Image (cartoon, rainbow, N blue to C red):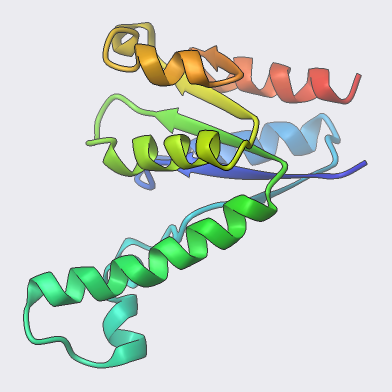
Length: 146
């Protein structure tokens, strides 16, 4: 059995690579998908497809449409979602993706530091499991295959 895991969360650190590397080292049968990780491409995809927009608001709206399309298609094909709330960046997209996973009925592993417990308490209760770091998430993935 092979799983598809959607990795939701901030795109500025290497947490995805760490999960992919550690999963591969354990020979877990997983394919990983994610939002667009190229920030400039994500911001400009609307104009790339539709052409120049009249202002920044229209540019963002156009890009958001295509990014939402990508996210929904990939997340709905996923068997499981891992959403990481990091410590450094605003986490609006992570919250949106984790909430979408819950709405789609996708099993959700939420990674958040103890310091974020209060801010994420409701979302954490909707997740199947909440862990504090990538290593704990890897252990949860490994347990699925035992």
